[in-house]
Length: 223
Length: 383
Image 1 (cartoon, each protein chain N blue to C red):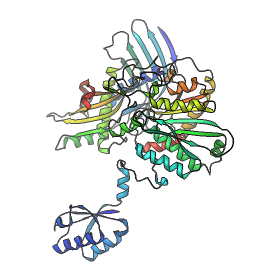
Image 2 (image 1 turned 180 degrees about the vertical axis):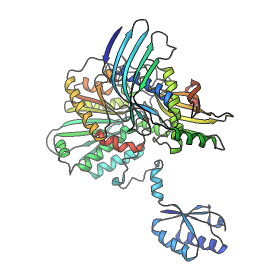
Image 3 (image 1 turned 180 degrees about the horizontal axis):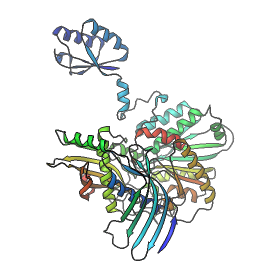
Image 4 (image 1 turned 45 degrees about the vertical axis):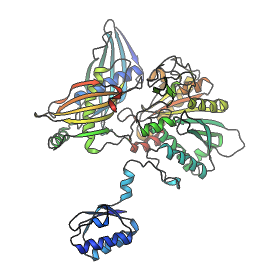
């Protein structure tokens, strides 16, 4: 086992940190709360023979709505050697408490539940970076759900970000869950590609964010 | 201007309102025509600012009650998405540097800046693949001294809108503060600034009109089935070796050969011709918040690496002082990825000592679609 200290700005460190941040976003995100990577403080890489590369990271996350609100985290990200089909393993700890967003989540939940017609929207943010206030929770939900997609599809030589929500459509349900069908655009930083992706997202204030279905879409799916 | 909401109660009131509209030439928003006005139905009328007083007095006189639907029409217009046709033709002082601008508006802006300042001259650089003219601005204090040059280009990648916004901001800041800021005057005593606000003009227009996240230029390949070369992989610096694709359908397609694209050649020609005087090459991108040093094509550090890093670190520290925004500093190959054919590498390889790529805000929360309200802080801290 060989452990090496990496400069925090090193590309491998920032890719691993982005992956950890995506994973944490998925686990802790909600319509009222989104977390994004702000800085990497420390990074070490451990090469484990026959297993893979494990990154030990210390980084800072910020709230996507309130950028001054930050939280320190540590994580271990293990990229498996050889088996390209399995997602990297992520373990993390968050220092301190995350903001409680129960109220905002419940407001959003009740608002959507009481809509007469299923919610539908496009281009969030729009070309100018604008997100109407009533769409912020929809964006936060996509942010959390895309964290799952990013985690499942990342490798040591990729770095994904959610670039834009192309379309979102609420799906009617008879139970207490909210369901949204999203077409998102992911930006992959190394190839610079913009990749359309479909994801079906389930959410309930007490049950967190679940992606029940997701898949890469062909280029022309956007037309 | 205000928009008033009126519900006329009687036929007499309807007639008075029709009369008001036709004599004062008020702008009827609802209904479509004055003859469609009916008692008991909603009326929305836009009243130009100079007539507001008069109209309200007339309504009061005739006991017609009204509500103000929109207090300030201009404010609402300014908040909404930018217009396609520009009315900035007349007054450069009105140019809104905190909004994103179309290429048409940027062309007009360049012409105006040149006409209104003795420090600025607009120069022809070349033509794009779609035959649009590329111009750069030279900011130069008249003198018989032969001055060194700092070159800055923006918008090599179409979707990075904050980049051309920064170039425009930069020019404005220099010109606005030239008289009052001794640092700027001293700077310009010894240096000329060459600014290319949009390098990839065709791509930029395409990102406005068709595909917001377009990156490359608009050259046609593969028998007319595929568009675009990544201009920042097209320069003659270890071209085509690493971090590229030879396939046009990729976002990092390096083109059919080094300098295959007219946009690349236009920049190369100018910089080559002046290279002995160029002290610093800057190229502005987004996003990521980095100040990148050569090289991308190799991890071997450039000969003046220590000095390059020191200057960049000083810049990053100064940048952070403004709003606390942190920029990371280091070579492209170490911080981002390997790439060959970048303009930054090429500039350094032909002998320009200081060559930097700036990746502006943010770190991915908005990415390429950075909201316009971040233009000002981004530009202020970067300056």
